[in-house]
Each structure stands twice: as structure tokens, then as C-alpha cells.
Length: 549
Image 1 (cartoon, one colour):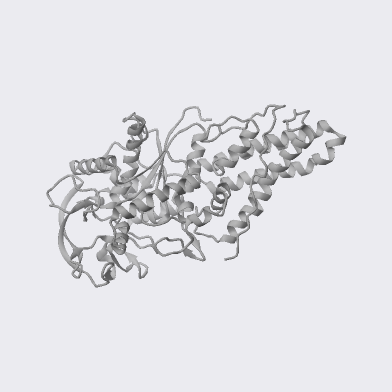
Image 2 (tube, helix red, strand yellow):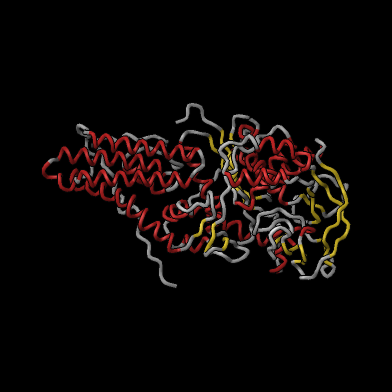
């Protein structure tokens, strides 16, 4: 346990409420964030994990236009669906909200006025694409074309999904309107711009002092700043969004959704504090320099969280910059990036219907794309569950619990004199817990899970070495010590696994009489009470067999 609890803000990317989520989303941002938040709570830190549905993203208005419905109709369909995902996958939010709340609107407009007051905004006319057939200006995502950097033919006007570069629509080669398919023309329009270029030097100085960041995040960010940062438009010609709190540009102007959505990390804690009846409580996570902030996003969102958002925070002043941006790479399916817009990868609901929650969490966590893209298929998920989770961890728990029931009527046996092999097993479990903690503190989640499973294998080796099924009749005291040591190792490993497998780990610990609240156990090797009856768990996990389709 930490001596002095740290305020930890776990901020997670805001998904567009315009379509089902898939495994790539879960492995990219949401499951890693939940694992990390659960760990920090277990060591005694004061964690606030927030996110929400982005209801103003242009993909929503694009889909609404295509379906002939309102943006509200799209949001009202998918935001509730997201809430079921979080419940089914055991994602433990402190607040999951939307960018459509009154609090968010107030905070975003206040943030804009603060930037304006600090001299980081100016108005300018620019040429923006206009669809003559539809007679309307085209926001970024309403323009598609060829990326000038990598040649990808389906790049969007704000970003290329292939190379990750942020773009302006005018950068695209052979631009086309997403509405009519025609070639748009450039027309004059007036917008607010923010002086991103003024933050090149402070951003570079800040980035060069980051320690422990993932190399692909830090190298990309430093390289992008070194290439030069241009001022960026802060408003768009859209009615769907957060309206400007000033009227000098006339009607029909909204704050650009990318900057507005980033401000959700600032507005959500304020909404949470209001809901708690302590409206100033959010300040402890945002204004105390000792607080830590972690942003869990996918690779395509790195520049927004390592460059643009820190620049906005610098421009505002008085707010904490990111402690870390542990962005993951892509999850691919058959070599293609998982994408709901491109129809790559099954919907998350398909997996939730077929796999136990902790089993699915395990398979995903074992393949987190922390340093490289990770290719995933259904056979790999089944293999991870059956050959690793069930065979190593589940089998260990079931065997030891069953033998305790058979030889000691289900009561935790008292430990006799420990020999060197026993002491080695006890120490191995404690070392597992310590090593897992070290990996988790470094946000190396996949390594942490691998180390925890190594601990389970070590406990299996100890059990097989001691063969309590053979000593049960000839040496009951030896058998009692073996099972007591094994149960202690199981309890310790369950703690190490609890951020990854919260439901089943909690069930194991409670069956052993270890006190824990619903959000997880204390991060320590539990002490088991000899004589305490073990609750009957049955098989911890079931083997998976998918039907042929």
C-alpha cells in the first residue's frame, strides 16, 4: 500500500456514438485503462476514471445524413449500447458521460474564453471546401481524398487512418465531397484560429523531459513538433456542436469537435464532482501538481493527446499536463486494422455473447498492442483461454480447492514446519506480486499479466513436486502444509490478477475469506485463517468451443 494516496486521473478516449464498438476499441483504450485504474485503486491511490460518448463528432452527422435521421437519433441509439458494453466487460467507470451535457457546454465555452483572454485566439478568413451541388460548406470529415504523405486513397479531411497524420482538407489530393461525390470548390469563410505555432518550443522542451513514455508515442510526438506546428482552426461551419460563446462571426459556427472532445477530460471530472455534491472536488485532480494524469487512447489519437491537448492546457494555464500517454498500436484482423467504419473485425457484442467476461478480458490483455500492432483472430482467443487461463490458472484453483475439500473437509489447513521448497514457493508468490506491481506502475500491462501467469505456473510446479494426492494418507501433516502453501499462493496470485480478471479473482479471494470491496482487493499478499471453510466455487472457467459458422 502507498503511504500517501496519489490523485490519479485516468482519462480514456471518447468514442463516437455512431456505430457498434469492436475488440480493437477494447484492446486499444478501454480495457487497458480499466486494468490500470483497478491497480492504482488496489495500492490505495485515489483514482478518477472518466470518459464519455462523443456526440458531436462529424461521423455522427455524416451517418445521420446517410440514414435520413437526426444526429440525436444516432446518439440515442448508440450511447445506451455503449453502456451495456461497459457493464458486460466489467469496465469500472467513475463517470461515463457524453459531450452533450450542460456541464460540458459550460466548461468548453469557458475554456475558449480563457484562451481568447490569454491571447491565443484570432479570427481570420480562410478558404474552405464547399459542395456546390449540396450548397453547403464541408467540415473536415465531409471531405475525402488521397493522403499527400502516404497515398492512401480514403484519407479524411482531418486525418489519414493509414499513416496517422493530421490533415487539413486542402492537403488532400483529388478531394471529393462525402455527400455528393463531386469535387468541392474553395470559398471564403471566417473562423477563429488558435496559435498552436506559438507552443512549438514549450511543447518540445516538455516532451524531451518525458521519462518512461512508450517509444512510439514519444518519438512520433517529438518528430511532429520538430516538423513544425501550424495554427489550427478552432471553429467550424456547423450547427451541431458547442456554439461559440461570442457572436462576432455570426450564426452557424461551432467549436471544432476535436478540441471540444479533448476538453471532455476537463469537464467530466467537474460533472462527477457536481453529481457527488462536492462541486470543487475535481480541482484535486487538475490543479494539484502532485496529481497524475494518464490518457489511454489508440495510435491514431496520439497527436491530439501528446501535442494538441498539452498545448491547449498550456494556453489555458494552471492545469496539469499529462503524466503519460500510454497509447496502444492497432489491433488487426487478418492484417487489416480493426475499424467499425470499414467493417473490419466482428462487433464486440458477438464476443460478449460467446465468452465469459474475465475470459475475454484475459485473451485481449494477453494481446495488447503496446509496442507493435497485434493481429488477432478467433482461434487465438480460444487458444489463450483454453490453453492458458483454464489449463494453468483455473486448473490450479480447482485442484487445490478440491483437494482441500476432500482431505480437510473444505477447511483451510494449518501450516506445519516449512522446508526450503515450501519457503521457495511462498517467496515466489510474493515476488510475483511485486514484479506485477512494477510492470503495472510502468503501464506495461501485457508484461504484468504474463508475469502473473508465470506465478500461477510456478505454483502448479510446486503442487506437482509435492504430490499431495500421494501424501494424503501417509503424511497428513505434509499434505496440510502443501495445501496451505498452495492456497496462500493462489490468494496472492489472485490479487496480482485482479486488475485483469476482477470478477473471478474477487470470487477466489472471497471464497478464501479475504476481505475486499467490490472494486478490488488491497494490493498485498493475503493472510489466510486456518480452519476457515472455503466456499465452493466449482470450475473457475469453462473451456471454450466456438461453433463453425
